[in-house]
Amino acid sequence: MTRRLPPLNALRAFEATARNGSLTRAAQELSVTQGAVSRHLHQLESWLGTTLCLRLRRGIETTPEGKAMASVLREAFDQIEAQARRIQEKPGDNKLRIKLPPTFAIRWFVPRLARFHALNRHVDVQITTSHQEVDFDREEIDVCIYSGSAPLPGLYCRRLFGEILLPVCSPGLFRNSPALAEPADLTRYVLLCSMHRPDDWPAWLRAADVTTVDGNSGLKFENSALAYQAATDELGIVMAQRAFVEDDLRAGRLIAPFRLRVPTEGAYYLVYPRTRRAAPLIRTFENWMVQQAAELEEAAGEPTDPEKEMRGV
Image (cartoon, rainbow, N blue to C red):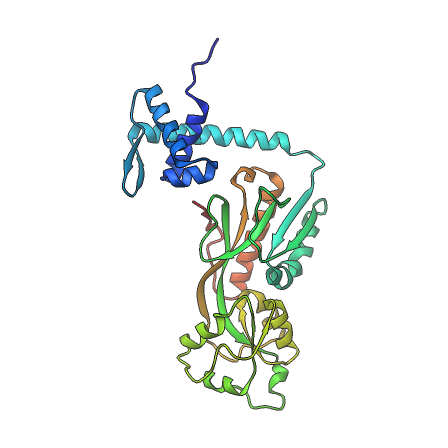
C-alpha cells in the first residue's frame, strides 16, 4: 500500500515554525533561509488545502488546524528522535564528555564528582574547561555548563541555580587588623576579583549604597577560582558567588563579613542538544546535577524549584 504523505521537509519546517512561533527562529534552527521555510509552509498549506499559519507583524500564529497538525507532528518527531537515539546508544558507550567554565569546575563540580562516580562507576567522565561557548556541531562534547542571563537559543537548557554575590575573606585576614564594621571600611583592604567579572564589585557596592570604595581597584585574576584562592591565602577580600563558596563558609575556611547578598540576572544552565534528551546517560547526569543544585539551595536556606527548566527558543 502506497502511503500518501505530505512533503517531509515541509512538515519539518512547519513543526519548527509552530514550535518557535517565528519563521526566523525556525530558519536558524534548521540552518536554512527564512525564505526556504516560508516556501515549505506554502507548499504544505497548498498540499493540505488549508491555512496553517497566520503571518503577523509580531511573528507566526497557528490556526486551529495548524495547532492540531503541530501537536501530531511534535509527538511523531519526538518518537522518531527517541528511537533513533536508542539505536545510536551502544551498550558499551559509557563516555560522558562535559565542558564547564573553569571556576564552576574547580569550585563546584569537581568537589561533587566523587558522589556521581560512586553512583555511576561505569561512566567514563571527561572534563574540559573553557569560557568559550560550546559548539555541539564542531566539538566532541555531550553536555556543557553555560553561564548567562538567559538560556542559549536552539538548545535544551536546564537551570541549575542563579548567581548571588557576597564578599568573603579568610578569617585570618583580621588577625592583625580591625574587622569590618560596615561596607565603607572596605577601603582599608585589597579587593580581589576575576577579570571575567569586572562588574561584580561595583554591583554589590551599589546595592550596599557605598560610594567611597572603588570597585574597580585591587587585584584582578584570570578567573574567579584564582581570586578565591587569593582570599583563602589572606591577600584580601573577594567578591564571590555564593554557590562557589558555600562549602568554605560552612567549614570556616572563609567568612562573609556582611549579611548583604546581591542576586544578579545571571544563572548556570545544564545545556545539550534537544536531540539528546532521550539519551539515558545524559538524563542520569541531568537528574543528578539538578539534585545537587537543589541540595545547595536548601543548605543555603534559599530553596528553589528543582523542576524549573528553561528551553532555548
